[in-house]
Amino acid sequence: MGKDESPILQMKTGRSGRSLDETRRRLLEFLQRNAVHDDISSQIELAVYEAIANIIEHGDRAYRKSSVQLHIEIAPPEIRISIRYRGNEFDITAIELPDLKRHFHSGRDGGLGIHIIRTLMDRVEYDFSGNSNELRMVKKYSPS
Image (cartoon, rainbow, N blue to C red; front, side, top):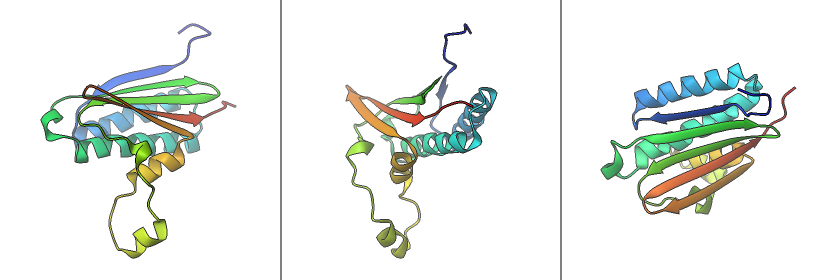
């Protein structure tokens, strides 16, 4: 990698729990190798995990065998994440965030993945074309 090139991780992952675990491992290794602070790494790991877990759990069954593409670029002052996958349109930026007090009092398990993603990331964008979804997330970052 040249002096002016940003570190990039590109990978494809399957839509299974085992694949998700491997994705998390590789993501954390990439962030650690590039000296990203632990608190930022943890936030990115959780947001990516929640996004891919939602694709696995709620995605259209017709696309179960298609992969999820992950692209992460460390380009201070930010880290850019793109997750692409085939399936029906689902714009997480258009979903109203839950009232947390009401959610917790309901006794409901789960259901906070979108809230977690949108809270942890500094910018979340979504695009849909054909049957291809792209979730773009940005985390502000300044290396020490």
